[in-house]
Length: 306
Image (cartoon, rainbow, N blue to C red; front, top):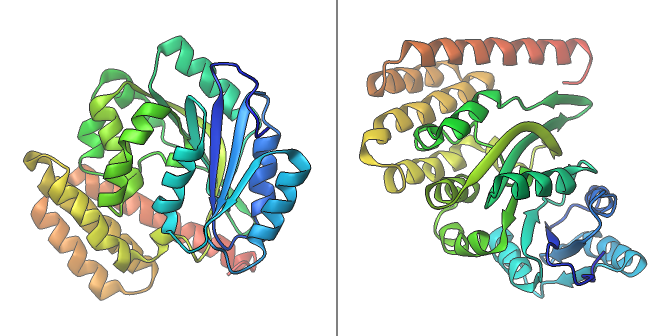
């Protein structure tokens, strides 16, 4: 698994790992179980303080893949960059150490990359929270990718963009993205924008991975992510997309505040959003999303999950 067999179309899977002792074995196992056989697995531990490194190193000896441990914590992007440079493969995929991929992910994506002559292919996945598993439906993006209008969406909305874990990318474009990822903390969103701007990127509304949601996910700290998202709109999006982009960010912030029972502050963000972009369709979509999330919360309470 860690030694390439000489085939030109080798695929590297990089797992940047940090303090996921309860999940790392499942992540590694999902790569070992791929139906595509020419896979180079590389696990880079970012100086974990729990048993993550010990578990990963033990599995590397048993299954013959490469394990590297940072002497000091480099952060996600530093660890990922190290993995990219260490990999010998022509195509690369990134897997978070608390997520896992479906067995046919690489095989199916390589077939699509070859058939459509793509530089990258993105997909979707299953969201896993407690015992609830939910399909992340991004079907509307498939049409926008196909007709070439996807950038209009990405310049204004990163909250419904496909995640990096779903993707397979040629080595050269991903190496080119390293600088962008160093510059912007909302790195996955910016990576997707730049890839679409410069390369041929495909998308399928097909689940290729499981995305585990828990309290340590960055997106849950909505006050932390607010300036990070704002930076993308102000520095990456063209001027004509900035007002609707900021409106979307404020709407999403209001949604988090409302679900966190901070209704008065949520209303203020909603009003600010409406002043920037008074879109009726956007408001209808937001209300529908809030109703759905409230219903899910109610069902989970009834089931004793909250």
